[in-house]
Length: 175
Image 1 (cartoon, one colour):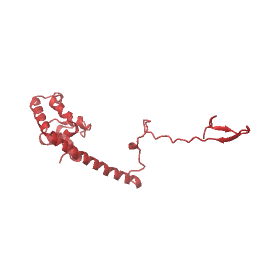
Image 2 (image 1 turned 90 degrees about the vertical axis):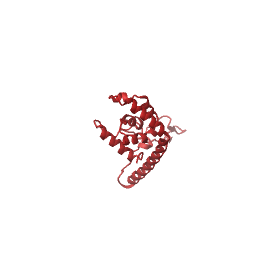
Image 3 (image 1 turned 135 degrees about the vertical axis):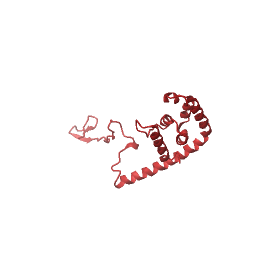
Image 4 (image 1 turned 120 degrees about the vertical axis):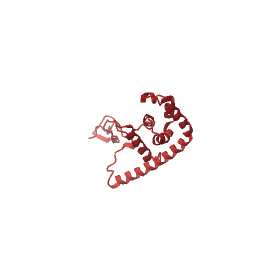
């Protein structure tokens, strides 16, 4: 029901009743998520992802996402090639300087390891190749750079290694 205010009601010049009622346009309330925050265009729920128009949207979204992932992977692989010599030098220095250490926390605090993390996303293909070819504790660096961890809590290092390599293959970062 529309609420009338003194500003929205105009009386007739003779003073007999209402001559005109101005209607203010009503705004549709914005959609909000469970936390009460407004939904952005990216997170608007689709009616159905499996039938009708929703299926088409889902298929288009997947194809766009896969093209984007492939393009990003190609860019990262190209950037990784530019960093390969520096990465190899730093990783060998890290292996040499930390081979006697048993605490992983001390190994990952080494300046060479931190510098590799500082290389950013371009180092991910190199880290995955190093993990595949010469297993070492690159898990902290991968997790720090990608902000992702495919490894469930409590997994052993060989299972973690396998999961990271599989993830890298799925992302197109390694062959």
